[in-house]
Image (cartoon, rainbow, N blue to C red; front, side):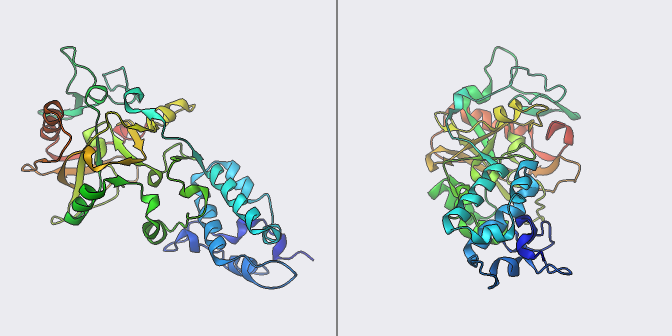
Length: 356
């Protein structure tokens, strides 16, 4: 007679449960099938119990299959619950690591910022990547242009290396970042466990030297790198578009100096896929941004995002950069002009978000 040990391993997890963290996303007992926890943890039939830490590592991966290609699901269904229980501890870890590599492809931080992709086309037409310094046209709502184009001026990303990202929502956040720089969220075990619901420590997914790309939507796994945008407005989308601030709340938008840094060119990798769904503002990723690379920060408000794409933010009319170290006059002038161009409330349409 078939038992729960004969079930595909994938069935110990129920993905997409509301208010359930991924590493706790056990499948419930149904009819003749015991729940996922009992399937892995119950004594009997001569099978080895799977320890709690390994269960959490496994469920973290299984629950993330929704971000993966079909190959990951096939892997999760390629063995039974009983087979996984029969594995040695090392075999179990090997399986989880192989599963993670099918869920999110590992890459390297090995591309100098000056060798990263920047679009030659400055029109911003169609679904092409947008040029750096893509700004609203004064007195023409909904119309945009490359502010720094003309007069033979070089591309601002290649010339100045200024990237933008939101990081932090409190005064304490700014102090921490000025002290420690910007680091990968995947290194924060408590954040990953309690906020993202993922237990990565001990697996290949916790390797800070390997940025990862989801195999399903061809986008970077943000927590495995420090991501910046070539564009000021693109930086306002980090870390999540959906954040909505009340009138007394804010986010901290940073300008950082990426010149001389070696990182991962998210944008170039996206464009290498067939039918690329590139993020049009242009994304670059780094292992870390040291404190001496911080150019300055300004407080903004994030105002949410519709399900169809795009997002909304507000730059107060009196917003001003708080300048830090490692800055040049050209960088300061560029940062100031970008801030001035984007003052006010702006809704970024889906057309300027992910190319489709």
